[in-house]
Image (cartoon, rainbow, N blue to C red; front, side):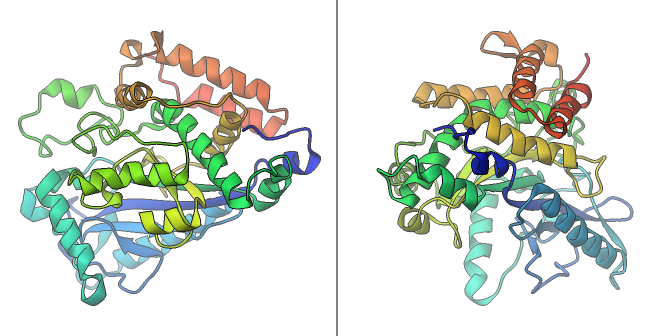
Length: 386
């Protein structure tokens, strides 16, 4: 289901849409040790906690361009950093890496506490700590939420009058999700930024593990379920049912425990019931490492590239992800998280050559110089030269 780019209005709105960012970061003291001070931002809807009390999650609104989302994150981030640096309990900073700092032990990782109606969130986190171990929860990154511009959707919908508008949106995002899953290895390869992992994370790991990972959190030692989920993309109902089956079988406690690189999400409360009833509102990409060369953990060039990547994928032929293809896609993502790209192969092709081929195709697809420059940036700055 590609867009009709001969339609002037559709073409004008291809690179607009809804953009939201969620950034996880660990709070540390000035010596670099994990903070044991309670979350100091209670009641602030833009600064929450993730798994542990010392893991801040900064959340933007849904903005109508990636640049505006970037700017809003800059503002939230600046407020967070300023507040932490002036805490009466002692100055703190945000750890700039996806991989955690030196960890003294499990007691160094206080599970986030909640009161009243939110107490279930704490109970859920305790369950995760028991099942996966606290240390794995310390990996931090950025989630990018994206939705197509409504003007674009309404224009494209006229070519699909056999569907209701929500059915059309659902089908569009279901097809996009399959393409992103299939190609997510390339985003991991281009944005991996965590090659050093302190040996306090896992004492019995061999040295080769530490030195051959570009992104620990996206690698085989990262945050994954203990099985490879197989999802159904024929409809929203099939998608929800395929997740719910793992819950019913006791493999997951809730849909939120599905640790997958791409999520389809409804508007409002993120649960299976809302998704089934109201359909897909946006898509979430969850594979971005914190970039320590950016004050807010992600650079504009990468965020703009995600926008172009999604539009480019929409121009490609439909992909129907079989069970084997889904397993291979996850395997490819884990492989792309390694550091030495001379040893990484996707479909029997070296990952660097494969990526350059796709980037060249993308550069030919877009006809404006701004988009071409964003793609050339990836060629020049994001592909390792081993």
